[in-house]
Length: 219
Image (cartoon, rainbow, N blue to C red):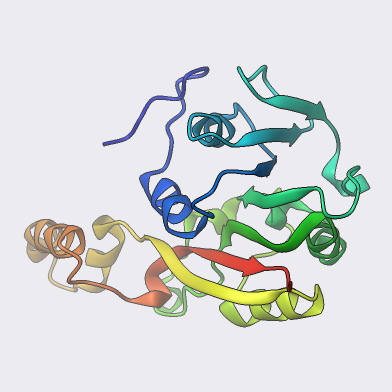
């Protein structure tokens, strides 16, 4: 079930919520939501006891959250060791110089603090022979997409400890059935593939459009 955004009618991602529940510290602390948009994840954190600062070029008012209007290309205007957790959902791919942002995120984390977020996956090798690609390749605001190896390099260079990297956001069965040459079989195959995916029985990493990641700052 997708929960309505409390401000704009956007929806919160169950996969992102599950990732936060899985990887955030059990004890709430200070969190930074980078590229917060309407603030649905910042508000989710507040509801669970976190003290949250949210940053965007044009942040919406978010009840219980300190918001800051700021261009992330200019770096992060926070002292070192300011936050126990940093969230960066679907933001790094838009930055011209993402390497400096990784360094900055590491700088503002407390020792032992955690970083978690998502980036678009540049791994649709099974789709390309069929002239199919992930939808995000059409987004002209993206400066890059990422592989798991690229994420590991960014984490290492920033001086962080690699946590978990997992592909998420599976391609729609409507895309998968394009692999089937006999057209009458595509619709029933789509139903079957959808059911298998929902049951957790179908998983091809190359067909997942996002990479979710975690990292920690050394103690």
